[in-house]
Length: 115
Length: 109
Image (cartoon, rainbow over the protein chains, first blue to last red):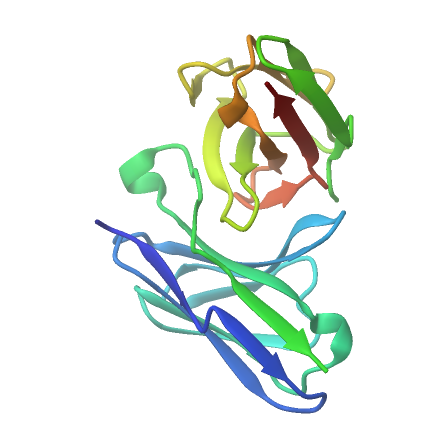
């Protein structure tokens, strides 16, 4: 089945380390997103990309960077991790051309802990 | 700006009804609704577009008041499988979603 996958699923790291979270999709969707989820705050948009050459900041992009290596791959990097970046991170995809409604399909999530 | 959801939590018995509300301060193109089960990813339920079009779940209904920038999700004759956290996502003309903080629904037998 066409899917959205994220690696790693769990990661524990130390303050100051650089880490990368990866997202791949086989849906053929153009649009990809990175969200973080914190208890009581819902999902907040970090970065989004509407095609390979398009990268945009979301609500909370400070401390994060992204790379859209191909239509199917969208990576999120924390250049120097800090404890308040401990959260559950979701990648999502959407595609107006195929679905007409911009509904988003989420990956399984990456649980990141920064010590 | 995040939309405001209410209530924060609701507990139901099977067969009971509930309404979840979502309110935004900005002009909206559409409202999405997602449900997240514990330990899982959010899953799309419904979308309501400006102008009245909607696409969604066969057993869950929703409304969208464009003038008030408000949407409501109606859980009717609830089932155990309805348990989870419900998020509304509001979309402006920039195609970005802003999610509410969520409403946790617990359905008991």
